[in-house]
Image (tube, rainbow, N blue to C red; front, side, top):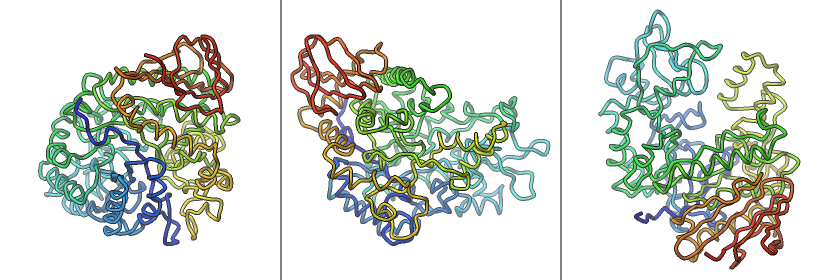
Length: 557
């Protein structure tokens, strides 16, 4: 495998609206990111992915871009972005922006011109179809709920929006449109960006081969994913996108692409793949408070372990997955995987270790290394996200009571990840001197970056140690290019694996449950590299693990 500059990535995702406000308007901004670059460099971060900061009416939190070449004033200016890129570069940190090219905002000048003349030049930049029998062209359901089609005024024409109606899908079949997009991407890369996280890229190609399918819900619509995700022919667009933009700049690209068939994975992330990496989403369907797993946390961990190893087997050295636990679209990982009464330093540090040393690249999310938690709401009115309200409406339509619907949202809402970053115990957690755009979790007095950094045994220091180990000269090549060998796969609640190459072997053992465990151990320990307890219990042919204990040790090959 050809070695690349990004193979040793320790990434950090920032949701800028909630990271750090510097002008007192209650909204995080680019100068706020610049203010914390030293903190991130000290943690060991060498790449930052920033969620959308382009100009946007914010119908979907910036994933509805109205001007690709401008920064939205709420975040700062283009000069601020250039300053951020330069300051990050001084610290050995590359900046990634979110690239959203499946759709634009309905306020983008292209779409405004398309509305004026749906059959004209800009109408062909979008997917516009005639209705059928007074209804939508077909009964696809939007990913965010409701019809995926919106009528244009009083005409019988509809435009496709796989997400909200304020996010019309672009027509990638149009070569002129593609060239405009490539020119825009190159303008950003020429400014010094390290690359992009690429949003919803699996949906560029659509298949309109059917008119309607039987509805799969009470709303009369159907999940049309087979017709607009990884559809045959998308490879033409992805190859061209890489050739015209990413490849000449040696850019890093992290694609939001799920359910890629095994036989196509190498095309996506192989030596000559479309992208540098794609996310491993296999863990995101798990939640310890889901009815399926409630009161069965150990069984859930067993199932999670099998899914993680199966995904690695599926990759089988053909490329680099992105290993993560938290992002802006999930509730906090501590709440998803650990029974609430067990959440603490040992359980969260063990959770953070389960896939940290897997092959691939690592991304943390803001607040993850501080131990931020979900902020459960008492009323639907306390939420902000249009998607949340669509989900709530759907739950009520399914027959849930308002209380049941709110409880379900409190389990799974992505808004838990979007509460303001908790920097310290001062007012508003040090996030802003104004009124925060979204309520700060009241637990910020105890859970915050400053407290974690000043406490010797804290999640922050555990992540810092893991990052240092993964980047250490003696072990870097092992963790990047070494083999992955699952271990103790039949032991309940244990996720363990070896990383091995011709020079070294490291065993990572995580007891992901609230009870102790004894494991047979035949090897010889050369060195204990990390442990989240003060000592380890390795006896004669036996490894004794306390509840939520993690041990990382180099063993004889």
